[in-house]
Image 1 (tube, rainbow, N blue to C red):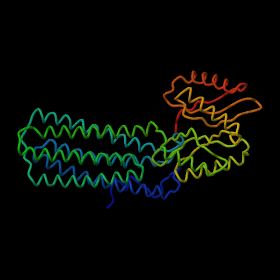
Image 2: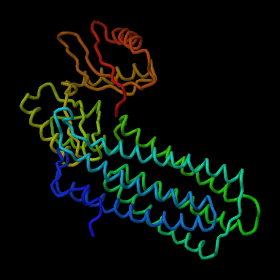
Image 3: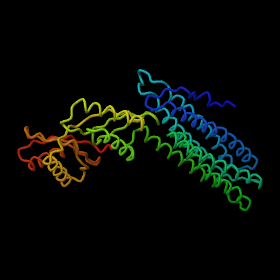
Image 4: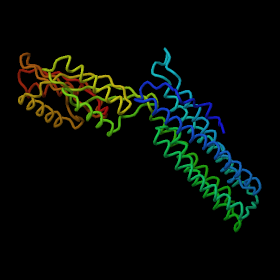
Length: 392
């Protein structure tokens, strides 16, 4: 059987500039396609069943729950379309490709969920203000219980595949499926309780369901917005990058790491490394190219290198470096560390970079006070340093 996603995801020969092996992208594409196809089929079926039961029983909550499932199928469709367009080849105007379209599709899913929740909120308020009779049979309740089990399975599948493929849209669909489990349980409870009370529990249940849906939509929007705006590299990624760099002497360190994502499997960035000032240009160049290729293969990140030439193999330089950091941290708690430390003994000049916390606002004042303090600490030396924010 050929589903709509088979047309949307021609994955056998997709272009992928950053991914180390095209086979990985083929596997990722197949997983997303299968999960999205399954999500569409399951949610359409669940939505239809719940809407029919809702109309037969006169339950606003059940109809709302069913419509929510139907909306989920639209979310899966948006995921597929977004993925398809994200695989377009780069153009002159978009030389890094269209991978961020996946983030936009995830954002659309979040907005759709939020709008659905707001719509159900209005219906639920109306049901509370204008209560009506309900007629829910035990068979209907049994069918609703079965739909909960199906949703639990769908939640686990989408979450697992979303994590494996890095698809935020699938992860958002997984989170939505989990909220559907909770809302369906509330719906079932309200349907059962309506047999024994005249209180408009259906409307109140719908109100609670709406709150779940709205919260899930807001959470999804906030999560995806972070990816669109740009995030700090994870601690694990930073440590792995530094570990790779250390395996290619004469390179060491790894500072001012900035990574820009152009989709779940495409990222570029910049990094500064330290090299001894005695190293030749050829040695440094060869090490940088090897480290760059290793990082690209293992992590899918294309890094551009900058370097700081240091003479920190000199015991006196080490003493001056440690004293400089100690003095700066004593004067300001916003100082995180220093790197790229180099002492020009003949010119009587000290150069380095200092990493500061984002809470530091007045950089000009900070630089003036630190320069005055360090030039008193090292008489006869001029001090020059760059201020780097704590990017990584």
